[in-house]
Picture 1 (spheres, one colour):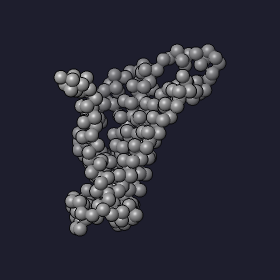
Picture 2 (tube, helix red, strand yellow):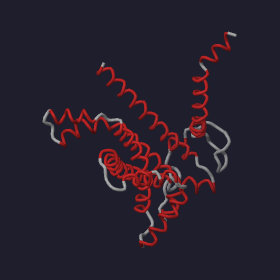
Picture 3 (cartoon, helix red, strand yellow):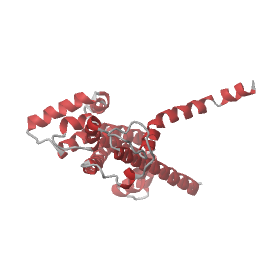
Picture 4 (tube, helix red, strand yellow):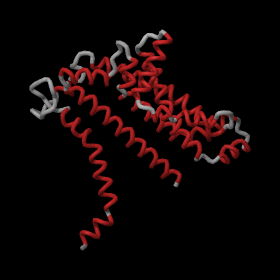
Length: 266
């Protein structure tokens, strides 16, 4: 009976840990197989422990080139979507204008629409405009579908802001720019950061929209898909593991900074 009572008290925690473990299982498999030395072209069965792939992460032709393209697109798409999305979010929350409700509804369409539909629509648009498919068409497409996620994240944060804080800053003779930099922006920063990180992740690993609008440009997800037809180099697992570790380190760093700030405030 004691075991049953303990299980009932900790059921939610146990269920959460099991769910988290299930979600992280693919990352664990990718990490483990990044140290594998397969006998053939496919890295699907464990053969032998090896650090060769970690020593030569760019040992596969064109892989690091495609990775560089994906990182460049992700960075610029994140910057563009974050700047535009932040401005749109502030406009939707702080101002009243005609068609405001319609704009609010349209913002959610890219998130609700199947990617293949958006990809085909963007391809049609670029072809009708006579644009050459490549780096910049991918960048424009990524900014367009990342924009909705940024607006949603920033809008939620702006809606929870207390306008009296900005009024207090203005009462203390702070100008509009100073009020925004010293009061508004720090409060909205978590939402902006969340939107930016989400944009980077979505842009970096997108395949469907990129494949439609890439032309001859090959991004890292497209390289992985193409490699899977002929073989799966261990270096793909190395890059995936490295990206996962960087994401974990960023989250841990954010938690440490937040805890330190809370201690200072306390």
